[in-house]
Image (cartoon, rainbow, N blue to C red; front, side, top):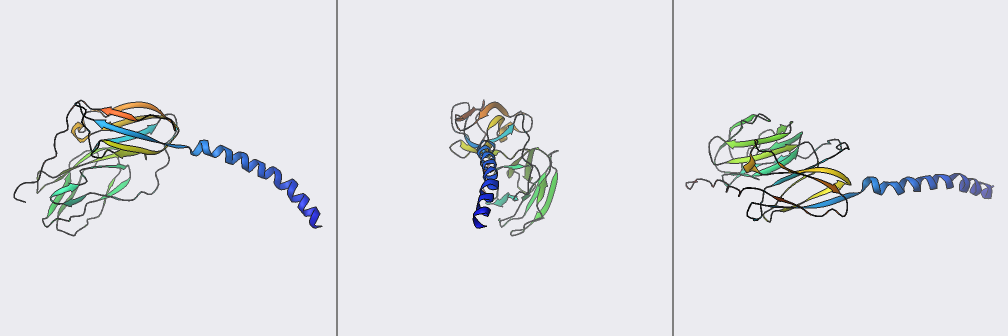
Length: 224
């Protein structure tokens, strides 16, 4: 009896195992993901920080937006930090105050107009949901040098350059993409730079050269 069962299992499981192996063999191509190195420089060839780079697949749907962790833009040392934030549409953003001074956070942007009236140190107001794609400029109405930029994009593939002007777009499935690059000095009027590339494990680094030199961020007032 045991020998007969072993024979049956061998005959019935064999084709199933073969089919499973065939299916698994196809998974790497479906799950293949690549990294794309990014470099951004100004018109003089100097490294540019705070450049947002984001990729949109061509001809294939975006992965559905799942639950995302809230981003944070704090008020610290009388500045917004970080200066530039990139998020996927639908993400919440918190605005905690770590300064000794009160702040009054406001956006006049059509993409996301909101206001958090004057609040003190240690207060974390309810988060703001950025539910539309686009550029949002955030101000403090009490301290006119304080400004932050939020770019909400309808893709999960995004990154921001560091001081060296470099970053990496990670976990990009193989395929064709439109990749765009934007800097705060471009505001909401000038269109981001755009390149079309094919992504795979052989994709060379992507370089962006902007036609301007970034304007330095406004420093806090000397009496603070």
